[in-house]
Length: 372
Ligand SMILES: [Zn+2]
Image (cartoon, rainbow, N blue to C red; front, top):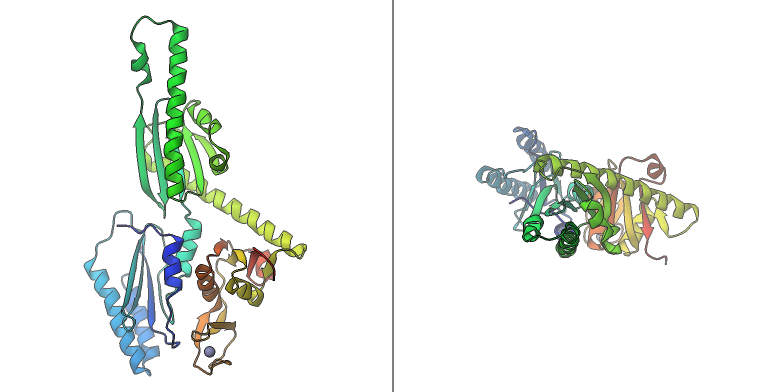
């Protein structure tokens, strides 16, 4: 089954690391839209040659990559699968696989912990949305999460036949018909309310022909209405593929707009010296403190740095030994570490299309819940 990726999965991964600073975890991401059959072999040879001097890590690498390869040989591609993420470590007896309905780039990384940046980006980009397609007597309700249709429900009522019998007047028929439609819309609302709450739907799109969609939108309570991002004209019998891809476009566009609005909030707070931080060190400290409500990261951003997993200290630059405990450190991408701390402290992450304003602020920043 395709993985329904959510923040809980990533949080669990973010809590796993080698307490002795050893590069004992392999993270393998594979693009399955355009597979490169030689990719794993190529990266494997490079990593092996780098680890050669260290017997323990070489052995762990061999065995860990073998676990991943065995999985690859034995498993089939799922319907709709576009990517794969595998995390393994032989000495930690660890194997975790995610079959993704979203695209990823090929990556093989050896590090002191699972490399979660690509997964965190996917969660930000593919927030789940709900789609309600309706006319006066039929409805289809969809939840699209992790880039795939995760849930779908159909309902219909037979208004015309129910009220056609007998010689009733046109006015009486219209009244009954309107009552039946109102009842039908309330029934849909019940379903939508329960389902969208359960599936953590962030955005809602209403579609259909005629005015049932507007009538439905009008009866929504505020906490649901505020999530409606668009109401679109769509034939009820439109092919599902076209319908879903249109809805995905709208959701993605809205994600971008929200991201832009959030960036404006960040710059606004910084100008007022308000509830915001920016730059590597201040942002990292605030994230570790649990102060950050929304963390901003420029998408392509990487910063070379080091980590002592024992002390959980991270900094940019190069240091072979931890200045606090003297342990051998590990070379890392500081951005990846900020993401891991953010996941552990329940911080929402906003990946920003490479933004010059954010770049000038040090590539990272955050809106704060509180100041100390
Ligand atoms: Zn240390």
